[in-house]
Image 1 (cartoon, rainbow, N blue to C red):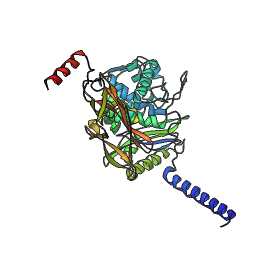
Image 2 (image 1 turned 120 degrees about the horizontal axis):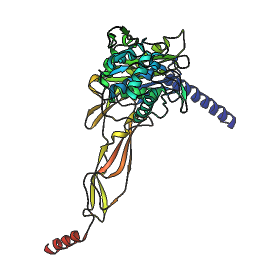
Image 3 (image 1 turned 180 degrees about the horizontal axis):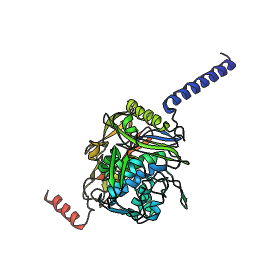
Amino acid sequence: MTDKVKRILAGLLTAALFFFGTENAAAQEDLGLYARGAVLMDGGSGRVLYEKEAQTELPMASTTKIMTCILALENTASDTVCTVSENAAAQPQVKLGMVQGDTFYMKDLLCSLMLESHNDSAVCIAETVGGSVEGFAAMMNAKAQEIGCTQTHYITPNGLDAQDDGGQHRTTARELALVMRYCLTQSPEAEKFVEITRTPSCTFTNLAGNRSYGCTNHNAFLQIMDGALSGKTGFTAKAGYCYVGALKRDGKLLIVALLACGWPHHKGYKWVDTKKLMNYGLENYEVREIGIPTLKTTQLPVKDGQKESVQIEVKAKADTEPGNGSNTGMKTALGAGNVESENRTRVLMQPEEMVETHVELVHSLEAPVAKEQQVGTVQCVIDGEIYAEYSIVTAEQVPARDYLYCLRELVKTALL
């Protein structure tokens, strides 16, 4: 075979590999979504199962209100009285139509907030909980940091487009899904959050009893798919249509977050994308139980200690679980969570995926050694991403050799 023929064949092979490789990648990664930013997340573990521009910062419109709701639930009682300020009453549509000086119970304004997405209710809630819109925004940003959101910036409690020294009111699809996961599985008020967001309709009055209001849930996804659990819509001229929602079926909790999913005349795009992503998760992922990794060695040598070695063991690190949140399992509103037992966790994986274990461990220790002293880490990796991280710690203490210890050893030796 001549060199020229070899070069031609090599070129054809390269072209074929490129063509088929690209086609395969497209088949796996391109779902033809309308949304600019999109995420499908395993709500139990926090693992991202599908993403499209998941870390692109975009305005999120009224999906903001899931954070407003959960902060109100965590910081006030349902019968807290909310007084309407001039600022709250002056908010633009969509609004409840409250009047300055009126009073409402918090539980009623939360229905107005989550069912009808009323902007005036959001401001009244924020001023009641945070003292002012600015004070409440500081609480929102602090909670976002606690959840693990580093690209999210809140300015308004209702999601209206805004700008300040920190930039525009924004998030990413991934971080919007993280906030929803917190609301559903990690907040102490998760059960109440689910109850409110699933309510079909409600009626209430102001405390004076001279004005009546009715609210209907606008989250159409609750009727689109079996197992639909919760969600929140949003729209502004800058953000476009946005949505964050959750579905629980076949032991799976799936969360979808969509940003910039069409503009007027394309209001239904968000439902098309949500259904497509939910079905992708249901059809391509299965629930796996993963135990805490075991170590090949169970002891480490100790220098100058009263024992020559120390027992070591693996211990879960609650602050480094997937999704930057604690892996404490879902609340009672959602049934069994991602923690199956003390030593096993649940994660959604494709049938062909494997868990890799990466261990970092010191070679030896110098006495004194404390009990539960960290000596290394174990990382569980799926598809190149860290799913969970555990500490390797000592199971006992080993004191250093001192004068009394040496004297006792000499006496033992002499007696023997």
